[in-house]
Image 1: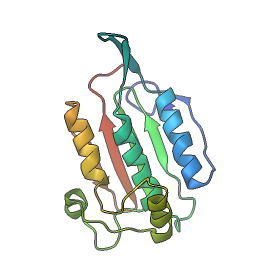
Image 2 (image 1 turned 180 degrees about the vertical axis):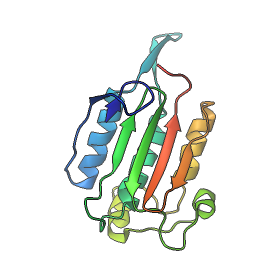
Image 3 (image 1 turned 180 degrees about the horizontal axis):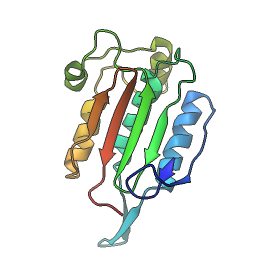
Image 4 (image 1 turned 45 degrees about the vertical axis):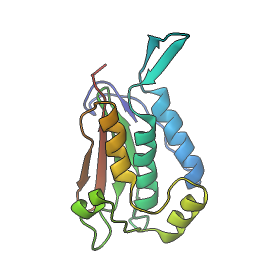
Length: 167
């Protein structure tokens, strides 16, 4: 969903995506790109368009949700919310049994869905080394953005990527 401002008070657009996971990934990323601001800068030779959010970090966050969602939960839905100052991705299923936030941030991998993970590895979306959260942090850090937030809320996992200003 795309929201006006920084709260969920006013939804401006949304899309329900019911597609095979690799296709859903593309649809989600296209939606986020459509509703993200792009600043244009005049470079030496041509204009340079810079996205409000680092696309690599957004991709990692969405892939993480697709691979780690607990699909056994009734009505499990991944929610991707685009705000004027951040993107939030919430997926059903907290961290896998035995996994902690500290371990996840250090790169310890504990895959919930082995078949999905294997398919995504073969499609070259992941490498199965648990480096996704670290990469998200690195992409944001390189751009001088506020550090991303990751929260294990028991029944859900939430990741947030911030932009450098509110539009």
